[in-house]
Image 1 (tube, one colour):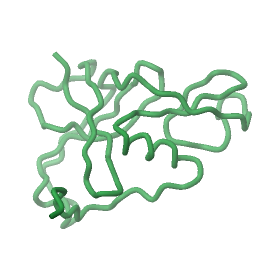
Image 2 (cartoon, rainbow, N blue to C red; image 1 turned 180 degrees about the vertical axis):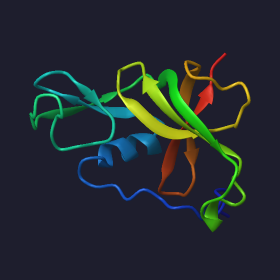
Image 3 (cartoon, rainbow, N blue to C red; image 1 turned 60 degrees about the horizontal axis):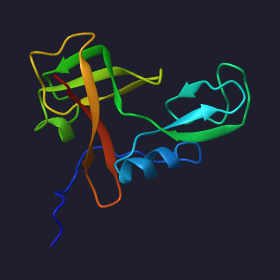
Image 4 (tube, rainbow, N blue to C red; image 1 turned 180 degrees about the horizontal axis):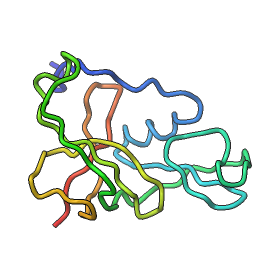
Length: 138
C-alpha cells in the first residue's frame, strides 16, 4: 500500500543542470550550485554563471534558512488541480547563502511578512518527487 497520496499538480521535469537539486530534495537536502570561478551561489541550476560566465560549477549543501523577500496569498484556483489547495501562499525566499528561491509556504499564515524567518521543509509528493517548501520560524 502506497502511503503517498496521488499528486495531481504539475511536477518538475529535471534536466542536466538541475538534476542534482532534485536528487537532493529527494534526500531532504537543499542543494545549490556554486561557481568554481567566482564563488557566486545560484538557485535554479544553469550551465553558466550569470556573474562571470564561467561553466565550472559545484553542488553544495545549503542550510535551508532564509527570509521572506516577497509573498502573495492565492485565494482563487487558476487551474483545477489547485482547487483543493487554496488558499496557499507563494513566497520568494532570500536564502542565507544569497540566492532567491520561489516556493510555497507550507501552512498559510496571517503572520507572514516581508523579512520573516523561514526554513525549508520537504514534501514527498510522489515516490519519485520531493518538493521543497518553507515554513515560518519563530
